[in-house]
Amino acid sequence: MYIIETHKLTKFFGKRNVVYHLDLKVPKGSIYGFLGPNGAGKTTTIKMLTNALRPTYGEIKIFGLDMPRDRIRIMERVGYMPEVPIAYEEMNIFEFLIYIGRLSGLSKEEAREKTKELLAYVGVGKLAFNKIKELSSGQKQRVSFAAALIGEPELLILDEPTANLDPLGRIEFIGKLIELAKKEGKTIFISSHIVSEIERMCNYVGIINQGRLIAQGKISELTRIEENEYDILTSDNERVIDFLSEKSYVRELWEEDNILHARIEPRFLEEFFLQFPHYLASEGIKLKLFKPHTSPLERILMEKFNIEVGTRLENLRFGFCIKMKS
Ligand SMILES: Nc1ncnc2c1ncn2[C@@H]1O[C@H](COP(=O)(O)OP(=O)(O)OP(=O)(O)O)[C@@H](O)[C@H]1O
Ligand SMILES: [Mg+2]
Image (cartoon, rainbow, N blue to C red; front, top):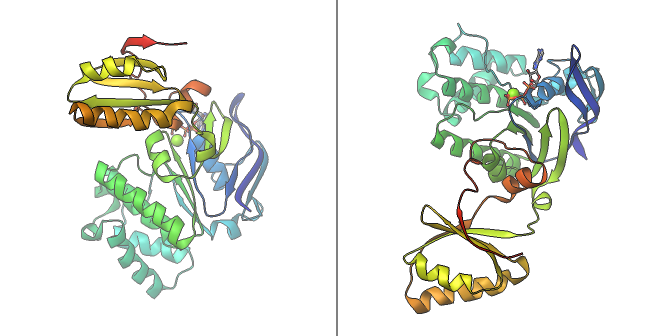
């Protein structure tokens, strides 16, 4: 069963077609990454899903109910974290969360209890009596996450929730989302333009570009690897180059900033994995780094769809090519 399902969801701003014929399918219990570059239409789509914006045409079903007709029944079960969080600048965090808790149908006492719990959970306990307007962007984002969770929603809709978090905050946040999906069975719909983040936490992805959904499905299925490229750093790259250049299964080999990049013929991957460590050990060469050259999802985006998302895709292919086989 799909928790979110849209059919031909479309939004025009004037004559501009910002979202076009989107058929989203978000399975129950999934962490669904809604991935696309700036201006792709992510926020516009999310606003339509949460009734902040009316579609020009198209259908939205959430929990099998119709948006906007059943919007109240739907939004009772949804935690929404908007792209620009929190308008209640004069309230302090404590008052704000209690207010949101009450709006979500909690009693006064329940709202207080839940607020205390969430303040610690999102890491703003010490700031409880600070006004919203006094918070940093990252702190606001944390409070906004607490606000999305307070009504114990079944579905979380999060618009770039990690945008202002520091690196440690991002890692913690990702861990929390995975836990919420796994332990509590929540469905999570999260937009981002950071491929690595989506890859780390999501099991489903929808890729949107210029308002159109260009791919959707299980990440593991979309990224079924056809070719394999690795980054390698050893204590003696020169000798490793000599060794790998001789191997017919090494289709490409180049060096960039002392890192070797090897593209391996997929059929012979097993042979490579058997021979390479054996060679290193027998020659007394230390292996300092070994990892996939780009993540599979990045590669799919670049090679199949010709779109660059996020910042990790820079400077990918300027290495000196040592060997090229057809
Ligand atoms: N109210 C509006 N009126 C006119 N155009 C708009 C409006 N809101 C958004 N747009 C345009 O629609 C396009 C999609 O915007 P949207 O905010 O949905 O992108 P996004 O994928 O969320 O991007 P980002 O990653 O930067 O948040 C953009 O080109 C934007 O300029
Ligand atoms: Mg946006």
